[in-house]
Length: 352
Image 1: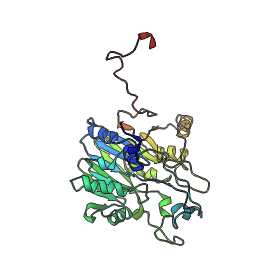
Image 2: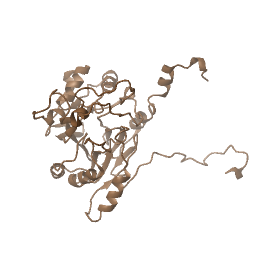
Image 3: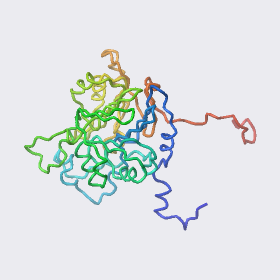
Image 4: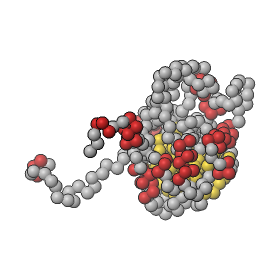
């Protein structure tokens, strides 16, 4: 048993962080995915881990950083996308609300690291360092031009990086990764260039969405995309089983996340079978109520003859497709399956 005089701030941090330790790392490693299926885990924000039945592991937008941690700085960094978008200067109160559920330095097997775009909560120096230090195989880092430039600036070897733009396709073992158009208009107002006025920004160098094709079905990762009618084009061009929508409650003067209406419209346009909202978990000033999506879905599903279902997940949770395709809400495993399989240690049975 530890003694008070042995406890330091550093010991407390090391003993308590990441909050889930290596629990999820071990769960992902141990998972055996059945044929004609795929498994996924929500890592927080829009971080997703995908595992195929052939044991291919794809990690998208894993981010292990923080939001604001002090009030000492009063204004935003010049050129911040929110400052550019709304002409604000006051520091936004975006503190991280969700726990760290995975330890990047405990990742033992991954076949590709993907980034949808170069915003700080979608690409991570800690993940890059952990992969380079701990994974022997020269697995690729895949993303749009600006993401690749950030990786290289951090020290990821250029030969390990693959720049993708819409229409590009990469095969990682049994999994095919297809880059498609992003609709992240916040990315368009992110510098560089420093002065965006009277410029024509190029989305394709800044952000992409991904379609991940597995033997068990196809996943659509929309990064931080806003709603676009061009989702309907993607829905016609690709067979999409599960899609992720970047959902949130936008503060006044800001349009950064899809609304509940947008999420349902996106699912309908993509012709997907399941729509999963993400990103609403992480920022204290953008947190949204997922019941909004469920209520609107119930209001509209019969009249509009929706062919999809929403799924409300929890950070750190597992989702297996197609096994879980009819679920509406997730609950973490509750345990105690072995109750009364062993003798109890109680004074008398009436206590029960």
